[in-house]
Length: 311
Image (cartoon, rainbow, N blue to C red; front, side, top):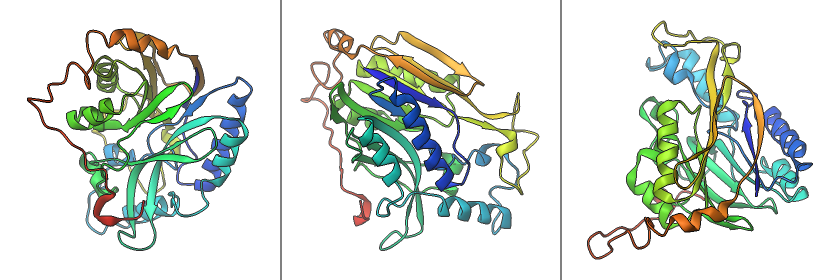
């Protein structure tokens, strides 16, 4: 199969322009007969990197941060609106699957005015076939995103194998990993803000443990794209003008490096993968099969949408 990795950034906190950019990227790779296109964490419409690098982000009632959260909310996806329709039409037109990270909002009913860190997985007809909300926002992300649930801990069937995904530090949650291994992935998409060294470790380990191919998707964001009213902390430890530095990479089922991490470069990466190599590696390790002791360990996943919120 052939995959396109978008190592770029959205038009920060501008949903309409980001959707337009997304459609353009789908159209661009279509000529190369791509089966799947993947985008990073909170691609629609921007990961809140300011939580990690800016001063005063946790001050109570701080006007710049309240405005920024509101801007993020207004430029997030409501699954019950038609916001995703242009993307869905492009995917259907070009017979392409997609995995896209998003800030997702609930506008009406129970849970309204909550933001989630989400993944939308689309089939080649443009249908949303899996919708996952990050189980636990990491550290300061809790200032922006609500807690997700197990509803989207699934893989989907495609012509090239079973496709699944997780977000960022969910790759350090052993039971989340087990739920996805039980879903029998052939190709796993690991969404990151940018894939630093420790994230490469998590992605590579996931490939070994799941005996699957793993694509780590990292994004790019320049200092000049930081929203107004924010000040970068002297303790942020930045080594360049890139706030998000990419790091997209691909690992095979033995943990072998198929594509080494690419940093500080915007690029649309096209890669062919042979997913049939996964099966042979499951002879000596099948985390959901002969290597799981069901008589010793009990494990189940509650896949209901959290507290009855709309799917």
